[in-house]
Image (tube, rainbow, N blue to C red; front, side, top):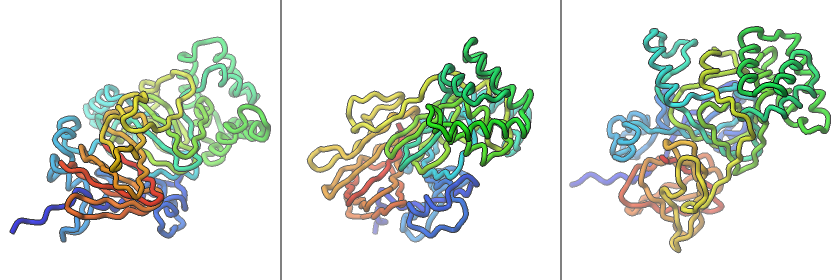
Length: 428
């Protein structure tokens, strides 16, 4: 008698990362689980070897790590096209991120920089788990963050004249020479010099940084154009007292997102998430170069080599209907689509900075929508109730915080929902 066919979907049990900057309540509120009183910073969905999701195929073997399942059958779990393009591994990592206070200021390298840096550190014999190791692997790490509510971030260097205005408004001796330099010299010269000055050459002391923090609180209490930004910087100064990376933070755009708005972060863009709940999708790499608000190693030379010192305001992204002609930086909305029985789309796609991933939002209704399974996918429910149904009649119900892994299949699955919102991660 032939073995029963597995449905193309299965629920995931996902690890939670307890980083100190995390909210104690946001992820429990989403998943409907009790808060523990400890930070719950990130919910990881994927096959990262340090914290893979567990998948339960209900075949009697119990939940198993997703990375191990993929290693045992790469083409069955990922599809031949994904294996051909990215190798025998899931090329993206999907997260729920819940920030109560600022994450470290950081930059991710391009693939070329990552390959060169990884090879150089391998040749020098630096262990991959050493604190001073910069390049953990050969890959780049583009990211996309979509807010699930009000969300604050720092992203990219502010236009030089605006940063000079902000620094002048703080009226702190430490910053005055740099404000003048930004008005009279190219930003591409001043910004790297300023970062090296505060992170390596001089490293301002506690008294100077306390003076900057006091000035930030003063400006935040007013009604000027930089009040909101200075309030955010002042919170970072409170949470990371004596950290010279505070000065680096002042150079970056302060961005406030509303639910459904997103930021795409490509190689070289300095950024930090400050506060809020969002879904984040990224290439599956561990390469991070930090530039402040952290106790971890800062490789100043490496940081300056990979950072883009272009200035300007970052675009705030919104999703467009799948199959529309809306522009996209790297991947097209014309990927796998979800449509209802009448052919109407229920899926909106965010522009992606990378071919490794594609993020979309699904809002299914009682009318069954067809979800094509052209590649590996993870579905995350963030509101309402949703149900997946296979052609063989298998079903899986998803509530808020619930997620499922969908293997490539020749037949689509059907999706219905009641007040449902889901986010869909797949390849670009």
